[in-house]
Length: 302
Image 1 (tube, helix red, strand yellow):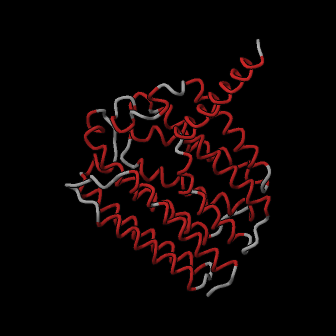
Image 2 (cartoon, rainbow, N blue to C red):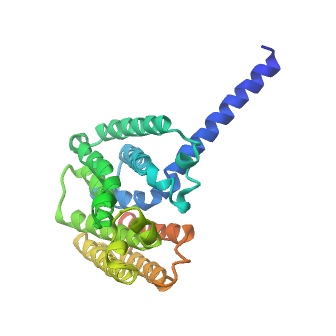
Image 3 (cartoon, rainbow, N blue to C red):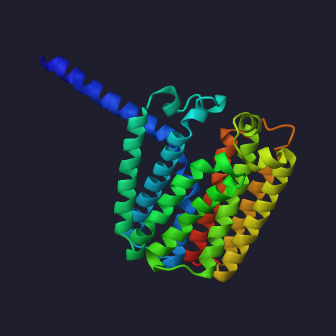
């Protein structure tokens, strides 16, 4: 092979590898890691009293991203037969064939390897409890087949993020972090209910279950609002138990305003504004709370 042909072949290989990596990243919506990571960082910061080690931050970040990526890829693989019928998911790489089932399975195995390896670098109890996370990764994708409580299971799965980060430092759980985790869980569940309203007709046609499918969209939106009220209340109680300063509550006010706005623009008869932008806007909740908690804890701003 001539030098020019070899260079071209090499470039082609790396281009294909890059495209494949991008496809896997899109398949698991890698950028959406911002939903869980801020709360993991909040817990890590609180557990370490504002001074988490660089190693702890690195391994917790790696573990969280790997765990979430494995969970999303597994969910997409398990739900593939439904996703192929769902118009909203027609561009998912696993649906279009950009990623094959075997490739997706290999990606899951690699992510789990990174997850377990990272957990082993943290507090010894982390690796012992890591199968608990794996249990929820496997159970959640099947919940819509059996129960409208699927939103709660998703919330519980995401609530593991602050719990896991706390345990990575402390090795145990206490009431304050448990309340923060519950607040995160009902926040996620409340949002997932809104997102589920888009799929009512599809769920009914395919024998799937959700709160909107079971109780109707108006009732589901009311439940979502109540969940988000409970979430804000949980953040307030957690702030009190952790003795955080007034600045932290500024983050809660911003969070409440974002949630209020989200509910204001959604109506049972008009779900047109439940878009990707709507989805990403919820990331402001975690980011704002992390920023204000960081300033309150690290800089001692009261």
